[in-house]
Image: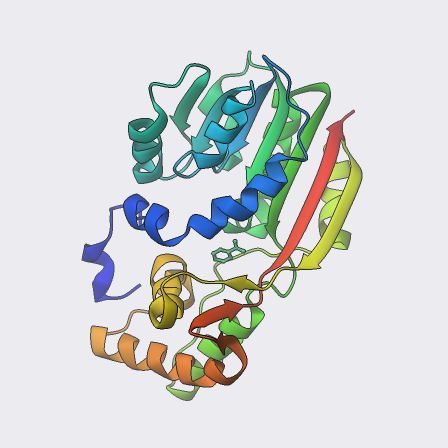
Length: 267
Ligand code: BEZ
C-alpha cells in the first residue's frame, strides 16, 4: 500500500472505476456463465460478484441469483445498479464464510464464480469449498474461473525485480493454482470434477498507454510495500519500461493472463 490509500474506498476497491476500466473482466466472464445450465427458476450463488454484472446476466436468462462479495463498495454499487431487478439479491460476505453470508437453510442449484477466487489465500480455499459444498444441492454444479499458475507472471516478475533492485520485497497477494493442485481440493469436498482446464488468455487492457499503470493501481496494491507517491511512480514507470517491448502492442498493453476454468458437480 502507498500514500495513495486515501484515494480509494475503505475496503480498497473503487467500484465505479472498476466498472469503467475493467469491463473486460465481465466481458470474458460471460463465457464462463455460458457453462451453467440455467432454466427459469434455477437458483445460483455468485461468489465474488463484484458490481453484479454477471449475476444480472444470469437473471436475464431466468435464474434467481444471490451475489456475495467481501467488498462493501462493490455490493453497494451492485445494489445501486441492479437492486430493483426481480430475482436478484446482493449480500456482503466473505467467500470463506458463505453459510454465514447467505444462511444455512439455503440450497442452490448452482454456484458460480468468475475472477474472484484467486484473491482468497491458498490455505483458505478449503473453507470456501466447504461452504460451496454445503450450499449446493446434490447434483448441482460449481462452475468457476480464476487465475491459474503463472497468471500475470510477467507483471509480477517485473514488479518483483524492480522492487528487489531498490531494496524492497514484493508481496504475494494472489493464489493461482494449477489443475493438479485444485482438482484434489474440489474432490476432497465432495465436488466431483467433470471438466477442468488451464489455458492462456492474453488480455488487452483498457486505457491505452495508461492501461498497465491503472491495472496496477486497481489490482496490484498487494504487490507493493509502503512507498512514497514518488517512489511508487518511479517503480511503476520502470516496470512499464521493462515490459513495453513484449507487452505493449498497437497502443495497448497485453498481459499474460492464464485461467483455470472448471465445472464440478456436488456428489
Ligand atoms: C485475474 O483476473 O486473473 C486477476 C485480476 C487482478 C489481479 C490478478 C489477477
